[in-house]
Length: 116
Image (tube, rainbow, N blue to C red; front, side, top):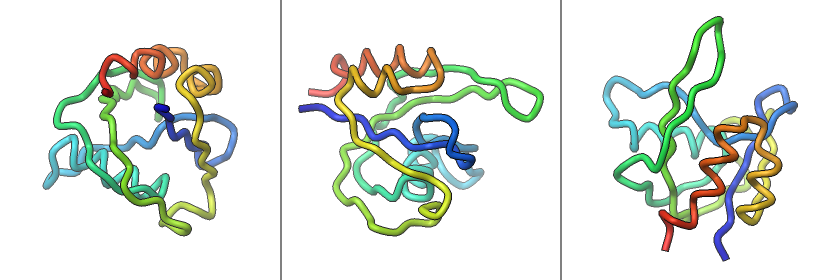
């Protein structure tokens, strides 16, 4: 069964997916893998292409987020942000309901089309 890993925001109020800035020396997919390790404590194979995108407000502006899938191969007990984030594995429908951003919830609902 396909599951989605959601994490809390650093203040613990919202549920979403790991995200961050694309590092200058990394591709977007490599940056996604790095954020998954830092924020969620998981490692694995990231899709080469984004499966979708959404925008959200932050720092007084709009952030454009590209979403990549990951086949998780390792789940760590401790990771860089484990003291400030919680994580939860959920079936697709439950993850979409819990996601704090509607645009993210819509992408989560579409995940079965991208993952075989």
